[in-house]
Amino acid sequence: MKRTWLREPGYAWLGLGSLWLVGFIGALMRFSMAFFQVQISEDLGVSRGFISAAWSTQLFIAALCAPLGGWLADRYGPKKVMLLGAILGTVGTGIVTFGGHQDLFFFVGYGVISGFAGIGSSATYLLLFAWFRHHRAKATGLLASASSLGLAITTPVFVSASSLTWRDAFLASFVLGILVTIPVILFGIKEAGSAGGKSASSSSTAVQPSLAAASTGTTVKLLPVFIVVAFALFACGFNMGTVEMNLVAIHQAAKVSPERIALSMSVLGAMEIVGSLVMGYWLDRSDKLALMSLLYGVRIAGFILLFMHLSWSPVSFAVLFGLTYLSAIPGGLLVIKEMLQGKGQQTGWLLLFHQGGGILGSLVGGLAFDRFGDYQALIGLDILISGLAALGYLALFLSRKRDFHRKAKNRYAVDSHAAQG
Image (tube, rainbow, N blue to C red; front, side, top):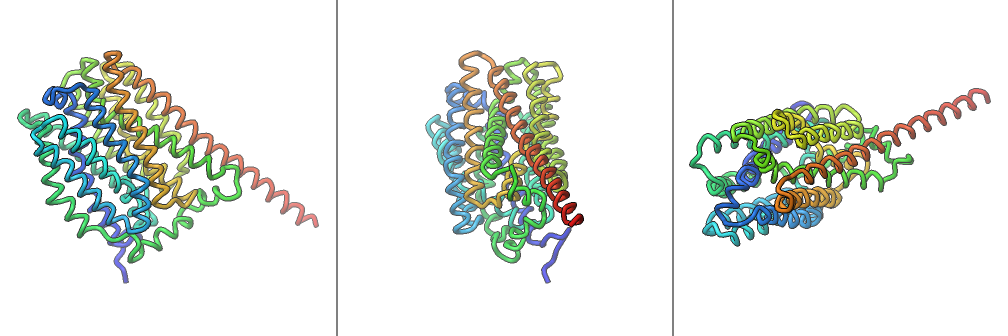
């Protein structure tokens, strides 16, 4: 008899722990590009537009690789694809680390080779959806907390130790990739389709019948659902490109003190953990469409505060955006999984839209600063596209609600007619 914990198989929780460790280590790259943009620009003697171009190139290649990775995961298994992505990512950081800190090696290592690591981007979600039946959203929330906790811990360490630089962060990422990430994937992750993974995945309709039923014979057609989720993930990517690539620079341009910037980044990391757990809990229990609309509404409020540049804007934005930061992707993918029974290739295409948004968010930030000397245009775009994403989810929710009322009314009329007959 298989060992279970909280109605899930033991190997699922072991696999989640392994993925969590991989995500924690991956936070080093996220921190390096978010916190050291100015220093990297100065050390390499390049513009911020060049750094944005490297970031955008990495996202662009990762976006193109996402559908291919989803197809390969369907064919050969998510674990093998994730391992390939980890190897490519480690090679990329190695090129940056040992490339003499030249701008060309930085661009090739980070912008190109690390981009190919995106081939494993959909594998994580496929593994979790296959392992977990009752706690899928919670599992994705716990996994998302890994990167956030890594950010919350890494930021004060590098701020307090002024001798540590972006070069040290890349070196640490390379070493940990070889010693930890690759072995953990090899020995800590179970193949998704084995030992019950298939049954967990195949029972998704039974777990969330309301969403699954809503996709059959209703006014909420399949294509509009895919379009809304795809655009929402694009908006999420744009938001993330803004925050991960440009948030520190936005605060610096607004003359925010380094101490307050460090505080806001730590608060952002901590609130991402809280938000991922809270949203994961509610995604397992409430209407996902309504909750996702609310999520983007909270993001709008955060970006409005950031646009205003008040004295308390940095921390306030960190609280509001942190609450929603890591839930937009799993929330959207759960909607697709349960309404459209999405597979790996479909997940890959959706992640392509997310990566595309990240490309534009990071690239527009650098270009906007070079053109206008500030980031106000970028923040304004974040407000606009977040508003459209919120309206899209709200429209799906209202459309499904109207259809439920119509079907209930029709059933009542049929029952009344039968009773009279």
